[in-house]
Length: 519
Image: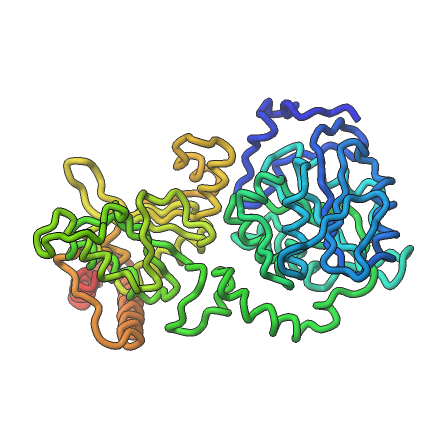
């Protein structure tokens, strides 16, 4: 092993700050197995329940790994086994709060001392260089989540096959390099690894989940800026089929009952038009100013066609006390009225300072107070950002003496990665490099000053349906404009058809005026 961590021989960049765009880890060049010198410590975490025989097979395999033994600790998280597990070659920690895989994984990672957490299921078999294959990526960047190449076998010694789902995802996404915003969907606790600091910054494992805890964790790691890397040289075999392979419909029925609350990206689980969800799709940040202006801004964010939005209202709320006061003339009257208005609105929370991240929500919209969103403004901005995988969309609203008044839609994962690479620095340029950014017209997306906009009223479903019909009409008119413009250009090219062109211009001008009045 000869290669160190300090610098990439071809680019000269510090390896820990290598810049991966979206999930295209192809810019990284991992060293060949056996050709480098590792330095990071790894904690192998194995959640276990009544599986002494499987552990007697797995733990000795860890002792045979090519990764230096002095850099490896093995932790078995005993999830209520009877009798309690005793595992030679491993440190056993007992799950004391809760039960299930989530509780066991969280118990194990909290006890870990390594730089990297490496998850393994107890019923796994490993190639001797399995851990080394994982760890070479973590020596390149600090924000990798490495996914092992797991094959399913009936008994040890077989070659095995990947699950059909894994093959489909890998084949359709260029082994996750082109996976868009969802590379975490292959994250599995059977064989994956992550930097300990990144895991803990993302909140660790949800100890309340006894199934799908690895998928939910993968989602939060993505929001924390992770790059997901499937390594076909990190070979492992799972003895017996997984639960989802045997009871797929039952597993989905169980897991989808709660994953919709936790992972906003799973849009098909959020089809209900009026339900509220634990994790919003977009968090809207608004600074409290006057009662009327702030109310108009907040209400517009809650009334749009994107139903799973939430608002963080920023102000010095701790200054509101219960002492006797002049109710109509107190200095903090505007703030108190706003707190009264939204104290029991579950989609609004209160913060003392501007929030740095919307995590675990995938998007943060910073909206200037006194500006309101149209019915489809928020949904339209998110569609645009998702369609182009943009990290930042800035909507220009107006210009004043201080510059351009702007609403900013930030992708949580993009700004998190920028902060991982260069903490404390202005992130916009780096986000543009890693994910892309774009300026758009606020008027085109339906932003308007509060004093020029109508307040949403009536049944929300009817209002949203009306907004949808209006958008459809605008799209149809725009398509007709393009058709007629092409017709005009064709006729303009034919001198003997000048009169026909003038006749065509009449309806075209009418449609253009209609479009402008529609916004």
